[in-house]
Amino acid sequence: MPSELLRMVVVDGVVIPDTRRRLPGRGAWLHPDPDCLRNAEKRRAFPRAFRIGGPLDVEGVRGHVEQQSKQVAGTPRDRQEARKQVDPS
Image 1 (cartoon, rainbow, N blue to C red):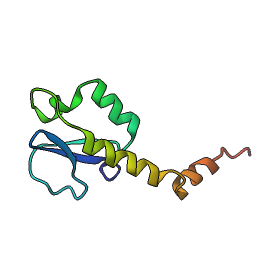
Image 2 (cartoon, helix red, strand yellow):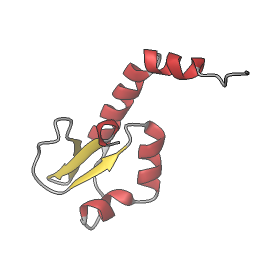
Image 3 (spheres, one colour):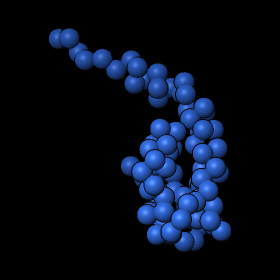
């Protein structure tokens, strides 16, 4: 679902989060999860997604994703998923 994904764009060789989804340029999408970001870096997905050769600076995205993961931890949604059980009847 796009509302759960983070859009990113490249500005001067730096990958930045586009939280309002309005910045111009080619965008790439990522789950705002530190593990997903780590896997994307490991697979070198950013240069391919943005069609740019060479390494890109993703520190801004990393900071944003880590901040979001701290805010999301312990939200009612997490508690609701923990309560989900199969009806034994």
